[in-house]
Image 1 (cartoon, helix red, strand yellow):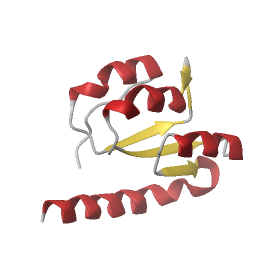
Image 2: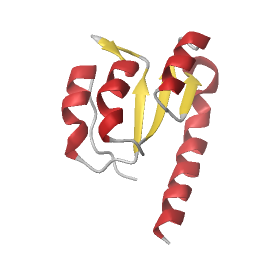
Image 3: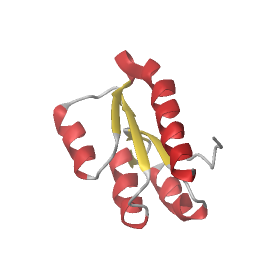
Length: 101
């Protein structure tokens, strides 16, 4: 697994989205100047197979539904499920490895 980059704002993330062949994007739902949904809306059309993990302290149903509508894969409440991230990454890297076989 390799870190392809990071961004603090949705605008910076969207501008960088075409610069690598990413397989996983981890987003915070609330970002300075926008939200993880803004990033998903901007990059999803060009990256339909990208796996997306949204982390949030705002696990409201309407936010989850908005993310699911954009075909994100995981929506985690940071305050109670943050420890699940390593297992999700292991699962995804295992799935990626099986695709290469």
